[in-house]
Image 1: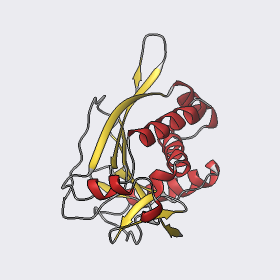
Image 2: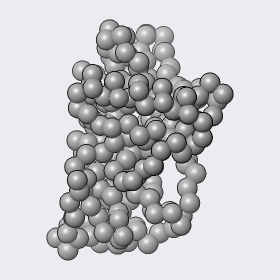
Image 3: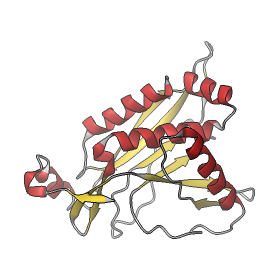
Image 4: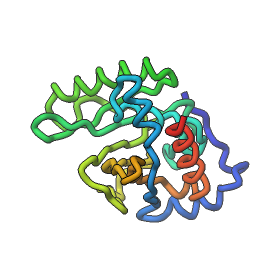
Length: 209
């Protein structure tokens, strides 16, 4: 479900109209996440760390309203829930785009995520299913690289307002602290650095629980 955001009553109307006319309306940041506690919790639960931090990511996305905004036919809609399209690698080192449904319940989310991962690993091709709605984040893990910046392949003629969130290699420091780089790219017509900061802070809070 989605609700129309009435532009005339929105305090960011001028910002939206300004940034949406740009060829590249996305901006991005890269930051470092402390994943020490999150990694320990995942191992205690006997679950995949990838599934664990993907769940924390999508929980934080759904908690920040600006991350649920999408542009459809030059109008802004607020989705009730946002799912994830994560890149899933296969044994032959190709990947496919998944569709992972959001659930606040970690057990339910884990079950559906592992089922979708298994489906992708056994299905060739890049697009192995339809994506009827854009209530998505584009999610990827690059566990081989401790990156300090990241860019994405984009077609400027293709309408896109989905946030893109990527994680890098886990680094273990001398004191045992674990960190990962995280990149976030978002449409500037829909949000600003303040909202990205809200997301990062809440995601880190979830990882520290």
